[in-house]
Length: 198
Image (tube, rainbow, N blue to C red; front, side):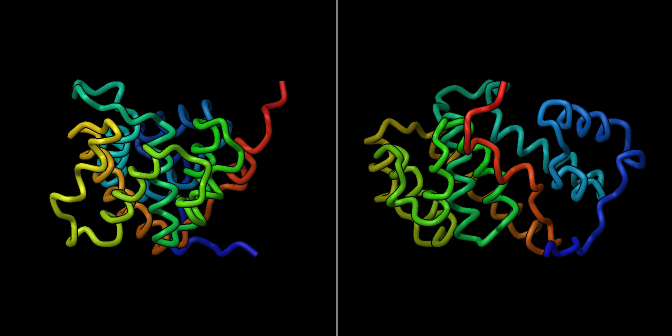
C-alpha cells in the first residue's frame, strides 16, 4: 500500500507558465513526471530556487567553473549513498535509477544504497563516498586529514566542493521528501535494470 502525500501536489494546469514548461520538458524527456517536480511546485519561488541549485550541481556542463571532473554517475552515486544514510526512499529509488543508467550497471544502485563499501565501484569512487558520508553524518568532524585521500585519487578542490555541496543539498531534499510523504514514481524502480527494448 502506498501512503498518500501529506501535501497534495498542485495540478499541472495550475502551475505558473515557467514551471509548467519545465515540468513538461522533463515529462517529454523521461516519459513521466517525477513526483518531486509537482510536489515542490506548491511553492513556486522555492521550486525555482531548488531546481536552479539542483541543476547547478547535477548538470554542471553549463557552468563555467573549471576543474570539475565528477561524472553524472559519480554525482548520482553520492546522492544514492547519502540518501540511503538519511533513509530517504524517494531519493534512493529515483537517483538509484539514474545511477544505474549512467554507470550502465544494473546492480550498482542497490549495492551503493545498502553498503557502498562492498559495491562494484572504483577505488576513486570509494574515496569519494567515504568523504560524502562524513559530510552527511559527521560534517563537524571534518579536518585537513580528510582531503589528501581525495587528492590522491585526482579530485580537484572544485570536485571536493561538489561532493560536499551535493551531499548537503540532498540532505535538504531527503528531509523535505520524507517530511512531505513523497513517494517515488513506479517507473523509477525498473529503470536501468535491463537493456532498453527497441
